[in-house]
Amino acid sequence: MVVLAASICTKAGKAVVSRQFRDMSRARIESLLASFPKLIPANTQHTSVETSDVRYVYQPLEDLYILLITNKASNILQDIDTLHLFARVVSDLCRTADEREILNNSFELLGAFDEIVSMGYRENVNLIQVRNVLEMESHEEKIQEIIARNKEAEAKEELKRRAKQLEMQRREQQRRAAGAGGSSYLGAGTGNSMYSPVPRFEAPQTPVPITRTTSMPAARPPAFKGTGMKLGGKKTKQAELIDALGGDVAASVADISAPPTPSASSQPSAVAIPKHDGRGSLPQVQTESVHISIKESISLSLLRDGGVASMELKGDMNLYISDPSLAHLRIALSAPKTQFGGPNLQFKQHPNVAKFVPGQEERVIALKDPARAFPVNQSLAVLKWRCAGTDERNVPLSINCWPSPSNDGTCEVNIEYELDNENLTLYDVVISIPLPTGSYPTVSTHTGSWSLNADSHALAWSIACISPSSDPSTRSGSLTFSVAGDDPSAFFPVHVTFVGQGSLAGVGVGEVRKVGVQQEDGEKEEEGQEDGEVPFSVDAVVLTEGYVVV
Image 1 (cartoon, rainbow, N blue to C red):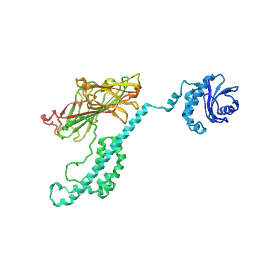
Image 2: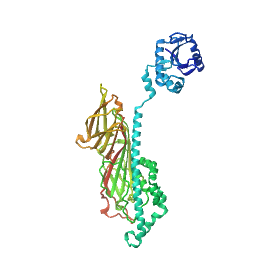
Image 3: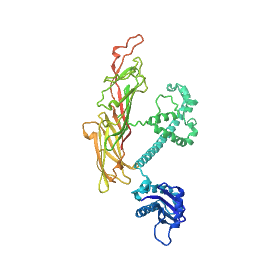
Image 4: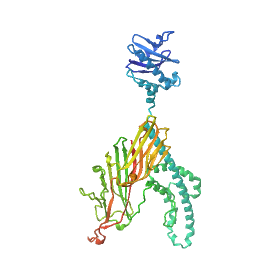
């Protein structure tokens, strides 16, 4: 069969919608449609008429005609079947078969016509398949929409909490400012030595702090109560931007925007916004005079059938010295337990820090100029590293999700994890498995705990701690559940979040030693102070930027 065109026309032969599948001019189609009503015989039940060139296969559609224009050699039975499919598509897309409704849905109708006939030949499709193609549903798009809605809900809750904290802080600062302002006038004749530095009391009255703050009512206490809630409303967009930048930035900006507290005491204010450093249940580290912070972030995409789609690890080491006598020192890195990344692991030092000696196993962090000292009371990034690749041996936590569809319309899902890196201990591990729409799981066996996330309609599997001990129960676990649905792809992507203690790349500190410096006369300091071992503390954290199984 060769279908030249599919058209919907009036009973007078005026074209409403027409789709040509072969090279035909518009004038030719309009001429064929104009002559079509004159060819229909009266008082007959035939649904086809012929001319010397073409054949019309038609069907009445209320006040319209839907017809196919084919060549005379076409199989008329197949043409009739194709015509019936066209009519069902029109009825499915249009509420009524009138000219206005047809024109309103002309774009969808032409798309459906192209799905049924291609280059004049019928495609092997039915009405359901055409409907699915037109709807263009995407499982990945639905997942992204769910994730976006969850992020919006979390952001709204965080904004409410931040606004409440800022409001409480401003009220407390105003109360303290009012109390301290009164004492500044009365304390002049008391003789109290704690309030002797009078210039400190006058500093808040100068316009300099007022220009730094974004809140004008702080300088005029009587107007604060009337506009306090309005200030909280103004901070919504700013707080949303600060929330996207991170908790540390939020705390610093909140300190700048808060009204200054006039106080003669050297003690810090009791009202402060807690910093959200993302540590979770990670144990706190007792800070020494020499404190070294190691922070890594990993972005990993695992394939459901095995292998790594992409992986990127970024890390940095920050040095903080609080004792000026320990500013001259050298840091020796410990030998890694495992070879992570191989040649893909690249290090980059601070411009003032000496490079690693090629071919030497021991890696030392020291200044290029021994006479210089590290900054005191200031965090300095002395080392950074990066590793990217697809080597499966670098995966810290392997995830295996195995859906098994059954004949009864349900699916049994087995998911397991195993810690593959000896340098890490993971805390607050959450593995989120999406569920088919409208179905709820029945968990048979599990390690740790699980819950349902109603917003994303996902099963959240939580493990408090995963450690690299010899006991297999602490480094691996599994969960098994059954749920309605027979599509294995509905359980992906699997998202994983955790907070790790240690270094995925194996970067650690072996020892810190104080080094001797040259004095002005060219002599060294005493031998007892040269090359002395210095106590230090290390805080190593690994965070996830994106850890998924696709």
